[in-house]
Image (cartoon, rainbow, N blue to C red; front, side):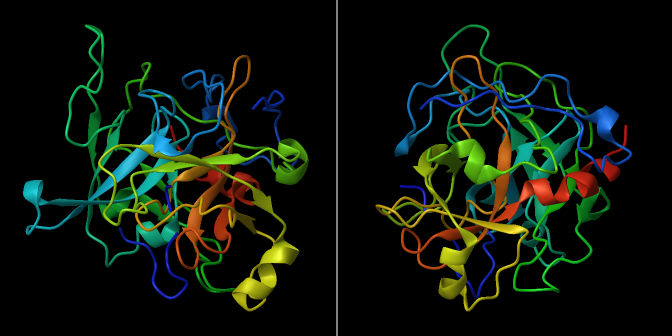
Length: 295
């Protein structure tokens, strides 16, 4: 189980049809900066139920390191994100608030205690990027309309990521992308290094399949304070995202002949493995994302 954060405290720390990448009706100034090739992860033939993901299965995954001099290496590995081109990470706004000392981002990571993560001669090492406040673009309306509203942010990397078999961007959805229709009863996949049913954060990347839940079903569970730019997943069989997974993507795991698209960003929830968790609906922010991309 990968399991979700508290509603009161931000977390700091199958076969699918082809994904279309047509230009939305409200394109922003940075559409040309989106990759022509995206969403190509390792080929999977099943959804994982809270187990270690294969190395390279989700090459868009990023993990964030926050300064903590009391920990080995001086970093607390917390939130995550998703690479959307060779310069930008998409994540949650609550993962990059000024009070959190975000210092480092890793791409191509799998096992935090091992480098490289595979045994082949051509296995690349993870890539390390330093972060300053000037590189962070949080949505201006974060947490103003409803709790955790507009919980989305971009981080511009300090240099271009080197794309290889362990580092690849995920596809963005069109502005009109309908998650329920696209999944048609299939699970979404959420991945991260967050807390597990055993308690501590995982040292290896884990993933789990979680079902889509309608906003009408989720509203009573969250005091009817959710908005249409949020989406629910989970609440079934103890499968969930959890503290430390915040900012990471929920997506359709790639299978033969398909590409992975990010549907949402892990935002908040209740008890891990309990009620459905809340994710920021990425399609609602397609225009905001592309308008903030720069060469």
